[in-house]
Length: 111
Image (cartoon, rainbow, N blue to C red; front, side, top):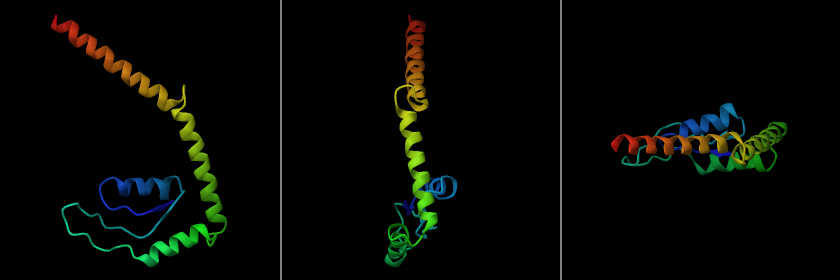
């Protein structure tokens, strides 16, 4: 994955992809921008082209292959988490049930 954050949490997402999961590379944008400020050109065509070539043309060699392997591993874990009985699925159902029970308690207290 090639990362190009601009605002808000995108820099945190980039850090997760590049530094934690090690499944991507940066194209060089390090300056947070705002929707209300005039945007600055911080990433050039050359930076994007170099990143694409590094990943797609195999210029990264073993490092790119390792990124792809880790990416597939993370993908498999994410799919298991959202499947029936997976951790995300179970947590979402628990949250829904907790909210339902709170709604019923609020209604009962008003009566």
